[in-house]
Length: 447
Ligand SMILES: [Zn+2]
Image 1 (cartoon, rainbow, N blue to C red):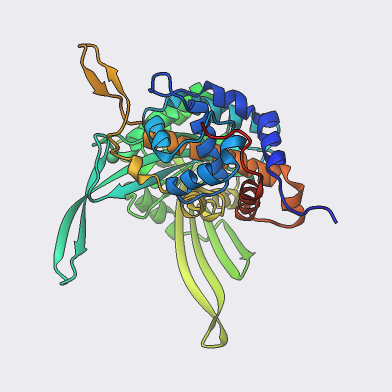
Image 2 (tube, rainbow, N blue to C red):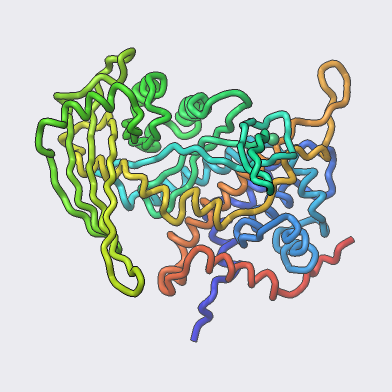
């Protein structure tokens, strides 16, 4: 019987042939002068750490010392996690972003986004992502918030928490759901400002036709965002919350006196959704806000979710009422209300290869890179030596997104084994990791 396990060779061949991994690795650079260990080795070490789902830099340090990894990535000699940190804190972000863009363009060219198109359209989503938080460590780019908690005696304690947050844009309709780009929130600014920056950068990175429809949260339901979408030519579906003021009121008012436009029942797993949909269509579109009378199409959904579950040994049905409201720029004829509902439901957030999966199963501990003062120096315009800006967190996150895209493509598009044996991405990662530990020790002895 043939070996039923993935080999590291097939993984590497796929990445090198399909995505020019080694070529990209050679483009990497950092702020060190004449380093013994190249930025390419640092990049490849971390990329493999993510591909194997190693939990921390300490674990990567151990792998570099005791497994075949150092030889596999072609590192100049053995190196430790202090080299990784020193390099990453001053890592150049441009080649990383360039690689992420190139990877996504290749995926598109090879039709990775064909499956799951919605009425023939490609769908991306914007979402806020929190990368780390701390009560003690802070850096010059930290965001701050007040957090109320209780001390062991039950007293109310207010503390300042430092954190980092970004807005990510991710393809979401297809089985492979790579991130296209990420924009960090700067101290003192809102998520909407970072989102606007991201949206204006995307056409420069990918061209405006890379996807067609953008899914957004209520947070982004504002005129500058909608204006930008219109200029770029992207259609939008925005999920509104009930507190979305004027529009919510007028939609509820308009729909209150008429029967639903569509009734449907949807069965998924052990859940049944009984859905009633109201749609303004294109003709009854409502003004977005009092300040912005631009009419938008509004869809409202009243849903009863029935869940069959066992309670005290007996099969029972639990019922929950849900209400949803979306606005969209999509025309009613080509995109009837049930399609907008399917797009707008935040189901995609819960799928197992979105950001949820990244934070849960790819939770590489890199918090100490944050506020790291052990980093290279440079000479500033007034001739003084100063630390280079800390890029550690941004660099590690970009490498994570690259690894996520490459590994998803390998598991979902390339591997016949994963399909045949119905392996999860995590199981494939474990198999790949096993190859490195059982392989013979490096032939290049550490110097
Ligand atoms: Zn910070």
